[in-house]
Length: 397
Image (cartoon, rainbow, N blue to C red; front, top):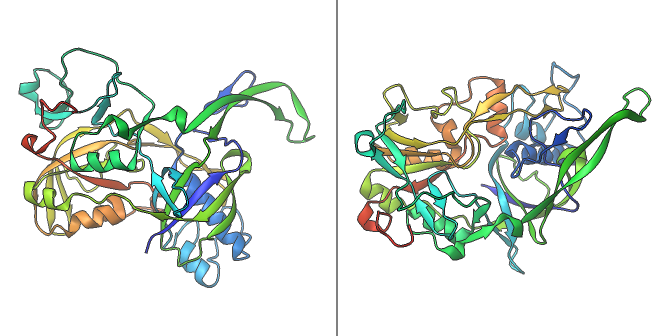
């Protein structure tokens, strides 16, 4: 059963990306929203502290699995246990109910105009699109509009907007919220320290982005396999410099995939809910060279993809006291269109519960860590016919 926790920062956060900084004049940009590994690491550190575990053994191994339930849940750095981060997204508190409202960045197939109208990209046959390119799939996602205009950035979808999106229905303007209402950032001045004397290093002044979340705004985390060991309240060290955050138990009502529409149309969209660590770069694991996704007896053909520019995921491994391998990832919000759905549809429910790990289990210890940290998770959305509310000519789409 998934356990949900709400993380509310008590101070500004330093959400660092992978770019090095600290030299004279360098600037450290914030990564917002941060990688899911940030939340996974914070929660696991709190679980270990509560269990009285101070280490897995010497840095670099060999590692020892802690005794008891905590060991079964977390395992070791080389062989993770049952702990899985299943969801991680921005959220805001609902007054007096104990629940939170999840908030989502618009996926790659949803473009918001300066007039705050949300429009879908449509998979279009390459010949019909009238372009020549090296795009490897049968259909190219195309945004059809009367005049060229720059999409509006910095918008997020409310739960109501996300429910419309999953169903392939028009997303109303009321379901869009500006990021400026959720957080602000400002540059903070820092100076490097001499590691030997622990005094300020001469000339090593830099700046870094500090993120301040709005009142009632934080992050919601879903955890599987923790065996009830995740603290229901208290504080966490969260982000760079170990800034404090409040941890509370919460409920989360996520919109469900429109299973009836998917069953009827025999086609669907997969949306990355977290970065995708795939062997084929942009192509999801489980999709063969023939373009067929196979999970058990379920099959579906990949016909289109909207994948923004790849990102590089890394981080710091505290157990090994070394950087994690840097690897290109498909970013959160990448969209994949599948049709010719056939076979037992339980495969889709496996995707919903396990992400792309259901199609391709971890290949090594590094991938197993990424699985525990919540990478490769997906949302399942309808790819409805045009005459069912998501087609061309709709006023709102």
